[in-house]
Image 1 (tube, rainbow, N blue to C red):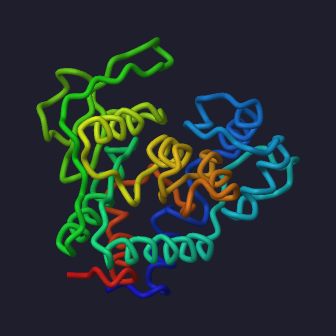
Image 2: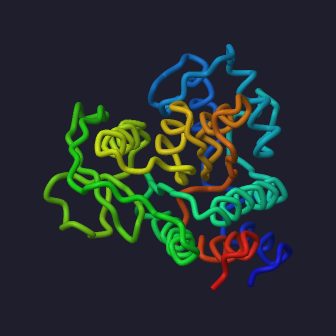
Length: 271
């Protein structure tokens, strides 16, 4: 069990909140690109509103605690740990609710190197509680536009968590996956479920395009997001994403373990 006070101290010490490694320049660039509806940062979300760069900055200041001053353009960004804990409580509540009715859940990550363990711990607990953790057939190919051109990736599952990998990179079940912001993998997975007549998820849990892509299609979605991922917070503001947790998504994977324990305890899923 991890108390709120202990977790608050941990997230700051580990760089998950407080001063984080994401640069202010990187975040502001993302806000500018989001305002221009650049698909690299909209992550599959098609916002209803007109979001200017200033609008996005104000939202991120409110939801994450970053500086709301547009003249502040250098250094490292800041995440308010109180906002992180508050969002984790809401995140845990949604997990607890779906667990209580033994619903179907889909987990997916574009950050397998860092966040696989976090999601896998949640998937294990939900499965033990009687939920169906969805893992449609492995091997679906998805063509994703990257800075190197269009590349073909393969959808795979590790410990109940979907990810993509380059063909031939490891074997099925290998934890070496690719970093991606694309919503195309979640669209492909949801299409496979629908075509096969299998249950669709009552909740999608993940990050990047897994959350925004699912939310845009009308599925309830919750996930983690860094200060340079405004799409999840815009989706939350517009009602397409249920919970966006502000947290640095690139620290060492072991640093997320206390968050897993905290969430499971709050969701009454601790084993």
